[in-house]
Figure 1 (cartoon, rainbow, N blue to C red):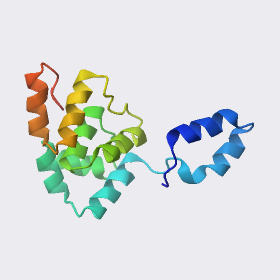
Figure 2 (figure 1 turned 120 degrees about the vertical axis):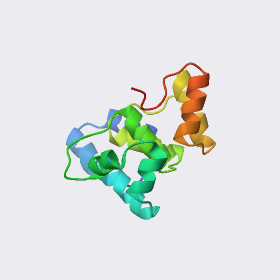
Figure 3 (figure 1 turned 135 degrees about the vertical axis):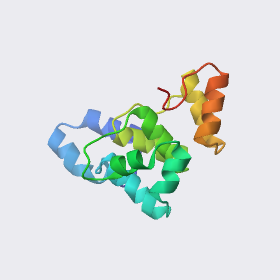
Amino acid sequence: MKQKDTEKLLELLKKSGSIDAYLQENKDFLLDCDIKEYLNLLIKEKKLTVQQIAKDSELSDRYCYQFLSPSNPRTPSREVLLSICIGMALNLDEIQTALKIAKLAPLYPKDERDSIIIFGIEKSKSVVEINNLLYEHDQKCLCEK
């Protein structure tokens, strides 16, 4: 997936006289993979293992293997996806992209809880450290049951 400013795409879409023409002209800039493909690509690029991701995400190995398997139709909740992304040590842009690909709400800095999560990501904090920050501020922890 190539990059083109989202605002520019929105401007082009608003001005377009035909959805077919817009889609054809901008096909290289539209999301063209699902969340499992995206994460598995990053896993290969960053030379990560599912066992390490599970440990760093505070999730079970089995769940991570199942979720990352292309043949498994399960999709993660926003909480689980955030935990996996943080466990993979993804940066904020990569995490926002993952949330968008999964059709989940991106982290929103005007939301107190999301602000704490963004702060933790930017400071390279672990899932446990981010959960501690969330707890200290009376916010729901990641993957809290």
